[in-house]
Image (cartoon, rainbow, N blue to C red; front, side, top):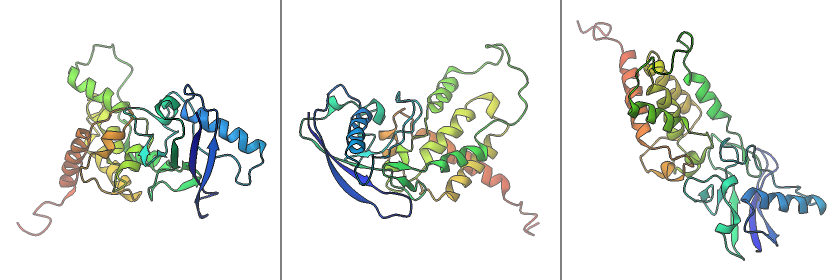
Length: 259
Protein backbone atom coordinates (compact mmCIF):
# COMPACT_ATOMS: atom_id res chain seq x y z
CA UNK A 1 0.00 0.00 0.00
CA UNK A 2 1.01 3.59 -0.65
CA UNK A 3 -0.37 6.15 1.81
CA UNK A 4 -0.12 9.93 1.56
CA UNK A 5 -0.02 11.81 4.86
CA UNK A 6 -0.75 15.49 5.39
CA UNK A 7 0.73 16.06 8.84
CA UNK A 8 0.48 19.11 11.08
CA UNK A 9 4.04 20.25 11.86
CA UNK A 10 4.60 22.75 14.67
CA UNK A 11 7.93 23.20 16.46
CA UNK A 12 6.53 24.42 19.77
CA UNK A 13 3.49 25.96 21.43
CA UNK A 14 4.29 29.51 20.31
CA UNK A 15 5.43 28.69 16.78
CA UNK A 16 3.18 28.86 13.74
CA UNK A 17 2.20 25.46 12.40
CA UNK A 18 1.52 24.21 8.89
CA UNK A 19 0.62 21.04 7.02
CA UNK A 20 3.39 19.06 5.37
CA UNK A 21 2.87 16.29 2.85
CA UNK A 22 4.63 12.92 2.97
CA UNK A 23 4.45 9.79 0.83
CA UNK A 24 4.73 6.48 2.67
CA UNK A 25 5.19 3.57 0.22
CA UNK A 26 5.23 -0.14 1.01
CA UNK A 27 2.82 0.08 3.94
CA UNK A 28 1.82 -3.34 5.23
CA UNK A 29 -1.88 -3.82 6.06
CA UNK A 30 -0.73 -5.55 9.26
CA UNK A 31 1.03 -2.43 10.57
CA UNK A 32 -0.61 -0.39 13.27
CA UNK A 33 -1.01 3.30 12.50
CA UNK A 34 1.82 4.16 14.87
CA UNK A 35 4.10 1.58 13.28
CA UNK A 36 3.43 3.24 9.94
CA UNK A 37 4.49 6.57 11.47
CA UNK A 38 7.60 4.87 12.86
CA UNK A 39 8.53 3.87 9.31
CA UNK A 40 7.97 7.43 8.12
CA UNK A 41 10.13 8.80 10.93
CA UNK A 42 12.98 6.43 10.14
CA UNK A 43 12.96 7.73 6.58
CA UNK A 44 12.88 11.36 7.74
CA UNK A 45 15.85 10.73 10.05
CA UNK A 46 17.83 9.03 7.29
CA UNK A 47 17.09 11.88 4.89
CA UNK A 48 17.92 14.45 7.59
CA UNK A 49 14.62 16.20 6.96
CA UNK A 50 14.66 19.84 8.03
CA UNK A 51 11.60 19.37 10.27
CA UNK A 52 12.89 16.14 11.77
CA UNK A 53 10.71 13.15 12.66
CA UNK A 54 7.02 13.65 13.36
CA UNK A 55 6.40 14.01 17.09
CA UNK A 56 3.51 12.01 18.53
CA UNK A 57 2.91 10.74 22.05
CA UNK A 58 2.79 7.02 22.79
CA UNK A 59 3.58 4.54 25.53
CA UNK A 60 1.88 1.17 25.95
CA UNK A 61 0.58 0.80 22.37
CA UNK A 62 -2.11 -1.49 23.76
CA UNK A 63 -5.01 0.97 24.13
CA UNK A 64 -4.45 1.33 27.87
CA UNK A 65 -2.39 4.46 28.57
CA UNK A 66 -4.41 6.93 26.47
CA UNK A 67 -1.40 8.90 25.26
CA UNK A 68 -1.45 8.23 21.51
CA UNK A 69 -4.51 10.16 20.37
CA UNK A 70 -4.73 12.60 17.47
CA UNK A 71 -7.15 13.40 14.65
CA UNK A 72 -7.20 11.34 11.45
CA UNK A 73 -9.27 12.94 8.69
CA UNK A 74 -11.12 14.98 11.31
CA UNK A 75 -12.02 12.00 13.49
CA UNK A 76 -10.55 11.36 16.93
CA UNK A 77 -8.45 8.16 16.89
CA UNK A 78 -9.51 7.65 13.26
CA UNK A 79 -13.19 7.02 13.91
CA UNK A 80 -13.19 3.24 14.47
CA UNK A 81 -15.51 2.34 17.34
CA UNK A 82 -13.72 1.82 20.68
CA UNK A 83 -10.29 1.95 19.06
CA UNK A 84 -7.26 4.07 19.94
CA UNK A 85 -4.72 5.13 17.29
CA UNK A 86 -2.26 2.49 18.48
CA UNK A 87 -4.92 -0.21 17.96
CA UNK A 88 -5.87 1.10 14.51
CA UNK A 89 -4.38 -1.03 11.73
CA UNK A 90 -3.60 -0.01 8.19
CA UNK A 91 -5.92 -2.72 6.86
CA UNK A 92 -8.74 -0.26 7.56
CA UNK A 93 -7.38 2.04 4.84
CA UNK A 94 -7.04 1.63 1.09
CA UNK A 95 -4.05 1.83 -1.23
CA UNK A 96 -3.65 5.46 -2.31
CA UNK A 97 -5.54 6.98 0.61
CA UNK A 98 -4.75 10.62 1.38
CA UNK A 99 -4.97 11.22 5.15
CA UNK A 100 -4.88 14.38 7.25
CA UNK A 101 -3.27 14.13 10.71
CA UNK A 102 -3.82 16.89 13.28
CA UNK A 103 -3.40 17.22 17.06
CA UNK A 104 -6.32 17.61 19.46
CA UNK A 105 -7.68 21.15 19.05
CA UNK A 106 -8.64 22.79 22.36
CA UNK A 107 -7.52 25.85 24.30
CA UNK A 108 -6.90 23.62 27.32
CA UNK A 109 -4.69 21.30 25.20
CA UNK A 110 -1.90 23.52 23.84
CA UNK A 111 0.21 21.90 21.13
CA UNK A 112 3.69 20.98 22.40
CA UNK A 113 5.02 19.82 19.04
CA UNK A 114 3.40 18.38 15.89
CA UNK A 115 0.73 15.86 17.01
CA UNK A 116 1.57 16.01 20.73
CA UNK A 117 -0.47 18.21 23.08
CA UNK A 118 -0.21 19.11 26.75
CA UNK A 119 -2.98 17.22 28.59
CA UNK A 120 -1.83 18.17 32.08
CA UNK A 121 -5.17 19.95 32.59
CA UNK A 122 -6.63 16.47 33.10
CA UNK A 123 -4.08 15.79 35.83
CA UNK A 124 -5.05 18.98 37.63
CA UNK A 125 -8.74 18.05 37.48
CA UNK A 126 -8.02 14.69 39.11
CA UNK A 127 -5.71 16.27 41.68
CA UNK A 128 -8.47 18.68 42.70
CA UNK A 129 -10.69 15.91 44.07
CA UNK A 130 -10.51 12.61 42.21
CA UNK A 131 -9.52 10.55 45.21
CA UNK A 132 -10.75 9.23 48.58
CA UNK A 133 -9.02 10.99 51.46
CA UNK A 134 -11.13 9.74 54.37
CA UNK A 135 -9.83 6.77 56.36
CA UNK A 136 -11.30 3.52 55.06
CA UNK A 137 -9.32 1.25 57.36
CA UNK A 138 -7.43 -1.82 56.24
CA UNK A 139 -8.55 -3.84 53.26
CA UNK A 140 -11.77 -5.69 54.16
CA UNK A 141 -12.76 -9.13 52.96
CA UNK A 142 -14.04 -9.10 49.40
CA UNK A 143 -17.69 -9.57 50.37
CA UNK A 144 -17.67 -7.60 53.63
CA UNK A 145 -19.32 -4.54 52.05
CA UNK A 146 -22.46 -5.29 50.07
CA UNK A 147 -22.48 -3.41 46.77
CA UNK A 148 -25.27 -3.74 44.23
CA UNK A 149 -24.08 -5.26 40.96
CA UNK A 150 -25.50 -2.29 39.08
CA UNK A 151 -23.35 0.09 41.15
CA UNK A 152 -20.20 -2.01 40.82
CA UNK A 153 -20.73 -2.32 37.06
CA UNK A 154 -21.20 1.43 36.67
CA UNK A 155 -18.12 2.13 38.79
CA UNK A 156 -16.00 -0.22 36.69
CA UNK A 157 -17.40 1.13 33.41
CA UNK A 158 -16.38 4.67 34.35
CA UNK A 159 -13.04 3.56 35.81
CA UNK A 160 -12.07 2.41 32.31
CA UNK A 161 -11.51 6.04 31.22
CA UNK A 162 -7.89 6.35 30.03
CA UNK A 163 -7.83 10.16 29.84
CA UNK A 164 -6.89 10.24 26.16
CA UNK A 165 -8.73 13.50 25.44
CA UNK A 166 -10.71 12.27 22.43
CA UNK A 167 -13.93 13.48 24.06
CA UNK A 168 -12.55 17.01 24.24
CA UNK A 169 -11.24 16.92 20.67
CA UNK A 170 -14.54 15.67 19.24
CA UNK A 171 -16.77 18.06 21.19
CA UNK A 172 -17.62 21.28 19.26
CA UNK A 173 -17.31 23.09 22.60
CA UNK A 174 -14.08 21.34 23.65
CA UNK A 175 -15.80 20.20 26.82
CA UNK A 176 -14.10 17.85 29.28
CA UNK A 177 -17.41 16.85 30.87
CA UNK A 178 -17.22 13.19 29.86
CA UNK A 179 -13.72 12.76 31.26
CA UNK A 180 -14.50 14.65 34.48
CA UNK A 181 -17.80 12.87 35.01
CA UNK A 182 -16.15 9.46 34.55
CA UNK A 183 -13.56 10.28 37.20
CA UNK A 184 -16.31 11.48 39.54
CA UNK A 185 -18.69 8.59 38.83
CA UNK A 186 -16.29 5.70 39.31
CA UNK A 187 -15.89 6.78 42.96
CA UNK A 188 -19.43 8.09 43.37
CA UNK A 189 -20.96 4.68 42.72
CA UNK A 190 -18.97 3.00 45.53
CA UNK A 191 -19.48 3.19 49.31
CA UNK A 192 -15.91 4.41 49.85
CA UNK A 193 -16.63 7.46 47.70
CA UNK A 194 -19.79 8.59 49.45
CA UNK A 195 -18.40 10.77 52.31
CA UNK A 196 -16.76 13.21 49.84
CA UNK A 197 -19.13 12.69 46.91
CA UNK A 198 -20.60 16.19 46.64
CA UNK A 199 -17.40 17.96 47.62
CA UNK A 200 -15.54 15.93 44.98
CA UNK A 201 -17.97 16.93 42.23
CA UNK A 202 -17.80 20.61 43.18
CA UNK A 203 -14.01 20.73 43.26
CA UNK A 204 -13.47 18.81 40.04
CA UNK A 205 -16.08 20.70 38.01
CA UNK A 206 -14.73 24.03 39.27
CA UNK A 207 -11.22 22.98 38.25
CA UNK A 208 -12.49 21.84 34.85
CA UNK A 209 -13.98 25.30 34.31
CA UNK A 210 -10.79 26.98 35.48
CA UNK A 211 -8.86 25.04 32.81
CA UNK A 212 -10.95 26.79 30.11
CA UNK A 213 -12.69 23.71 28.77
CA UNK A 214 -16.02 24.46 27.11
CA UNK A 215 -19.49 23.67 28.41
CA UNK A 216 -21.43 20.50 27.64
CA UNK A 217 -24.47 20.95 25.37
CA UNK A 218 -25.38 17.24 25.11
CA UNK A 219 -24.31 16.79 21.49
CA UNK A 220 -22.95 13.32 22.25
CA UNK A 221 -19.81 13.35 20.09
CA UNK A 222 -17.78 12.58 23.20
CA UNK A 223 -19.52 9.27 23.76
CA UNK A 224 -19.26 8.38 20.07
CA UNK A 225 -15.45 8.65 19.98
CA UNK A 226 -14.60 7.38 23.47
CA UNK A 227 -12.36 4.32 23.01
CA UNK A 228 -13.66 2.86 26.27
CA UNK A 229 -17.36 3.50 25.68
CA UNK A 230 -17.95 5.89 28.58
CA UNK A 231 -21.62 6.91 28.53
CA UNK A 232 -22.92 10.47 28.74
CA UNK A 233 -25.24 9.40 31.57
CA UNK A 234 -22.21 10.03 33.79
CA UNK A 235 -22.43 13.72 32.89
CA UNK A 236 -25.99 13.82 34.25
CA UNK A 237 -24.76 12.29 37.53
CA UNK A 238 -21.95 14.85 37.71
CA UNK A 239 -24.34 17.75 37.09
CA UNK A 240 -26.75 16.48 39.75
CA UNK A 241 -24.02 16.16 42.38
CA UNK A 242 -22.55 19.55 41.43
CA UNK A 243 -25.98 21.20 41.77
CA UNK A 244 -26.50 19.62 45.21
CA UNK A 245 -23.06 20.75 46.35
CA UNK A 246 -23.67 24.29 45.09
CA UNK A 247 -27.03 24.49 46.87
CA UNK A 248 -25.42 23.41 50.14
CA UNK A 249 -22.92 26.25 49.85
CA UNK A 250 -25.61 28.93 49.48
CA UNK A 251 -26.37 31.05 52.55
CA UNK A 252 -29.63 30.46 54.37
CA UNK A 253 -32.47 33.00 54.21
CA UNK A 254 -31.54 34.07 57.73
CA UNK A 255 -28.09 35.06 56.52
CA UNK A 256 -29.69 37.22 53.86
CA UNK A 257 -31.83 39.06 56.39
CA UNK A 258 -35.19 37.55 55.47
CA UNK A 259 -36.09 36.22 58.88
